[in-house]
Length: 535
Image 1 (cartoon, rainbow, N blue to C red):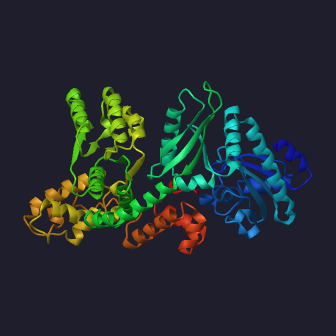
Image 2: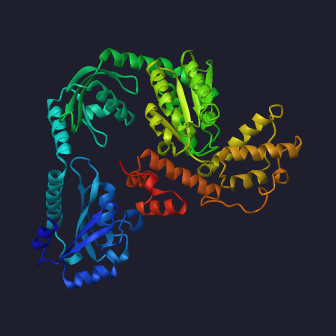
Image 3: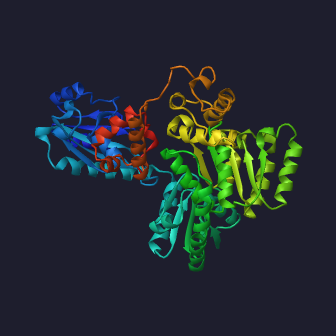
């Protein structure tokens, strides 16, 4: 295809650029000698990356960021070396997975640009996408065709999925979320065992029951996937809405007494997520670094769900001491009423995984309240299979990414360790030193430092002299955001990125700055742009 485009442009003063999904140029074709020399001087050549966050507005990076054709001329380029050029970039979107595979860009001297460049680039991309579809596996094509056929009927919400791909109609997108993909796949696989079609009911993660028709796509030996046509039950929708309204007040009342200490954007999001999950009857997995506060969050979630109920704690990290006794205890719990919190799920011995899977499956079917905590690498270990039982997940950020919380967490910890001295506080200089640290041991390390300092202070406010050795020196070891102004600025940037689902253009507009300024601020404040990919 690129060769054909080169033939069309062989006598034109224009160059064809092909970039990958990371905005790195992988091929450059055509163009007269003068244009090629100019592009070389500007480093517009294979091997160079033109992501918008690195080089500002340009035909490749901006088209990739916005997922649409984008034309840039002259001074609209951020880099001065590109301002004598005109270019148009068009994203190459895979017709089945809908991911951006790369960018096709046509670039010329500014004086040689014309409106046909965009039309030619878009025509070429349409042909490339047609070839991508033709080269897709027969299974992928069959799945897409079945989805389109079901969608044309228009009377149901349609989901087409396999283990790698999910396609939804707008109606389906309104009633399912990302966690429902695993739920629907598991339900359909079980119901279609030994048959090609099943009609029944399935309860989605948000307690909405739908009538569903599941059909296997392809034959039983090499299935391409599954198509599910769904219709919500009007009565169930009403009941679900009523339940949510009825539970709104209790959840709100309980969260007044279960407040997560902290003022950072991360903690505010955690508080909101816990409140939302408290109203949903589904197992929850809490992940994070050691000492980050996973068990605290799990306990808080339980109190939000049932402030007066009891819960049983099983520590998977101790299961290896007496595996039979540990499993027996879990079996006994499953026979009685009450919630369950499993700590350190990632440390569960491999020989117990199958037994725990069976117990959890039965407990989930009985709608037991189950919460588990685990390290970030739980999926890579033997206990990874257990993650599929937890349709809702929360990740606790490490303390080094939410240093704004240290003052509030310290107050809560001091109150915990000295309940008779409510007025006890950290002196400002001591707090400044604590806020400045990176805390590799997270909240657990902070708690240890404060407990030790309490003994030294003998009832007085904690000053620098009361901190343990190694915590009272002047080596602040701060990250990028070291002043109150920078912390506030960082929080505002993060909030804008979260509220716009990672869309840099909308985030910049919300903050009233240019997108190039947004990128500079993100780099200066240590914000990883890859965490906020455009949707």
